[in-house]
Amino acid sequence: MSDSVAAPSRRRRVTPQSLLQGSGVLWFTIAAAGQWLFTYYILGAYIPRTASGDYSRWNETGLIEGYVQGDWLGNLGFISHVLLAALVSAAGVIQLLPMIRRKFPAFHRWTGRAYISVAVFLAIGGILLIWVRGTRLNDWAALGTTIDGLLILVTATFTLRHAMARRIDLHRRWAMRLFVVVSGVWFIRVAYMAWAIASGGAGMRRTLDGPTDILVPYLAFLVPLIVLEVYQKARDSRSAPFKLGVAGLILVCGGITALGLFGAWMMMWSPNILI
Ligand code: HEM
Image 1 (cartoon, rainbow, N blue to C red):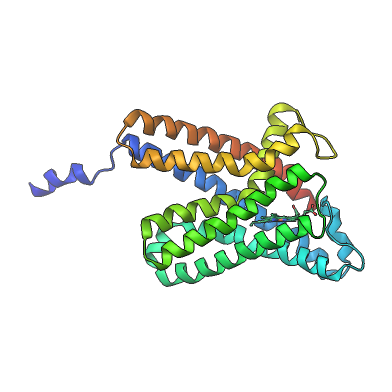
Image 2: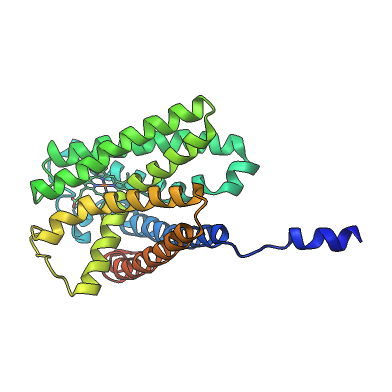
């Protein structure tokens, strides 16, 4: 008797909240696969070229400025930026997995410290590459990526401070913002390719100074940050229509992300992988 009464409450019911969470999980799964593909590209493209000793081959991947003869400091800064980028791309998704956080809290703490340190190194290094080494084709587009780098520093500080003060809910919210801005350069590639496929390249130029080329570095962190805030609001809200509307929005975002990833993999990443 008690079993038959208890059984329905144990069964998973489809509610606006569960649909919202399901859409979030679906988007995150697509993004995780995409971040690991990006990691595979970075390792598969740069490790064999670096190991060959002919560092000028870094430039085969279509960079603005990778290897420059005689600039050993800039070359070292570039390759450490690229190889550490593989680490954050692979680790970010693992860091956000609730199961890992719950089951291995000590692991989560240590990888979290490493993730934040590397993200800060990448942001400062990236800003130096742009403005000190001069790796930019266009000041406006470069400013967009620079703002993303500054947001990495801000969100990393809040994520760490809330974690140290054991304000776990705030820490979780800031960690998601940090993940979004650290993924900013990944979003640039995904957004760029999704737009190129959907519009046939409207507003894009080979010299990367078309209106789309300038807007994408800004939209690539602004849009995901806004969508994340709307998603958090919907999770906290009691309104079923709001939750369902946001679940639909996240599904659309999942479709756009998948399209952009397909394009990035086919046109930017897989042709440059040597292993
Ligand atoms: C935090 C996450 C970041 C990741 C995962 C990342 C990833 C990468 C990768 C993979 C490359 C090599 C280019 C390629 O093969 O596609 C690269 C280059 C570069 N990154 Fe980052 N990056 C990050 C952050 C930043 C930030 C915040 C900035 C600037 C503020 C930045 C500026 C640059 C610059 C200037 C280059 C050289 C691009 C070129 O020569 O064409 N990066 N980054």
